[in-house]
Length: 170
Image (tube, rainbow, N blue to C red; front, side):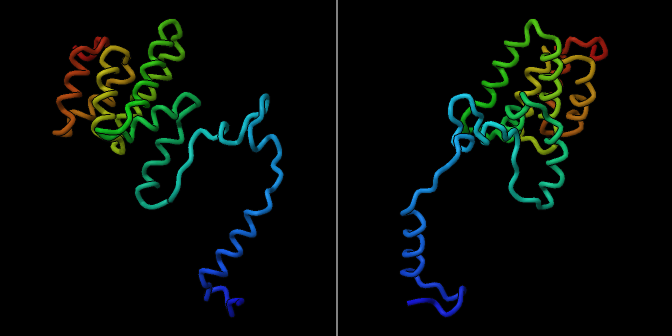
């Protein structure tokens, strides 16, 4: 039985059409699957967002400034207690790799500073402060100082600024 209009779908008609569509496999080019030597499209996506509500308009401009190593910082900014700590471990791996690379260290510092933005969770800000205390330079001091104005983040900001290697925090 064919429905009279697209709005009056019945379950049998829908299932018949859905099964017919899946019964015939479609050939896919190697570039879609990501065969050896060919990068799959999923390997090219650095950042994706669903929705453009009021909150997204405030968050996206901050996130779109991230570079290639920065997806770890984006993921860590949304970390909540009880979730996988993999984004934090990824950042710690980057910090270890930056020991002899001043450019990478500067990029990591910029990512940690972005984790102090208002959209980041408290756990993300605490993680960023712990690492900026030892890794941060003079350029991270203003972002850390902004945390002093918020009662919830004053403690972690004081911790980061008290052991900060910059002379202006003394």
